[in-house]
Image (spheres, helix red, strand yellow):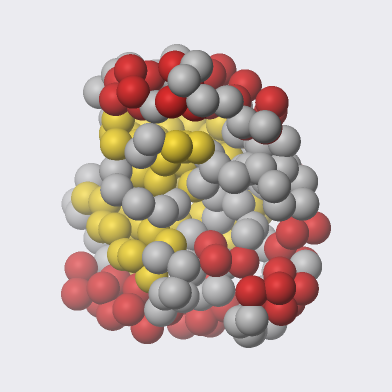
Length: 212
């Protein structure tokens, strides 16, 4: 397995390419801006896209969905609870002064308790609401793709529509802090971290800080 991080656009959003190098296939996770960059890196890696995974439907994580889908034909996965956000992408974009192209329909749901695959790689789907109602984290092979649920030294914001601070902390404590300490955490913004590092030092998890 190879995970490529591409930090895209004005929001410095992390798009991830999860690649099964043996089979030459990839899942694109949260294609934000710079779809051309994403597609060029896929070509460099020699990887064919089999699915597009959206951890949550805030606009900075979906600005490149249309272009990546158009060029690859790959099906799109999103948790049903974030479909209202996905369909409201033009409104979200207007708030931020950006434009979003017409989005293709979501093809497949993320179903908590099941798993998704790219080649021979399988990832468990965990529903981790709080940052958004349908946020999911994808767990497997020693990594956690968590969207904007958990960051190095911080947690996702909860002041956007659908945000819920109590739900966010419950999601982290029940679905992420139960993972082994050496699990690598790939967040939607900022550097990678680990479950153990966040358990020990994240002020929102140690009690040094709490969400309002």
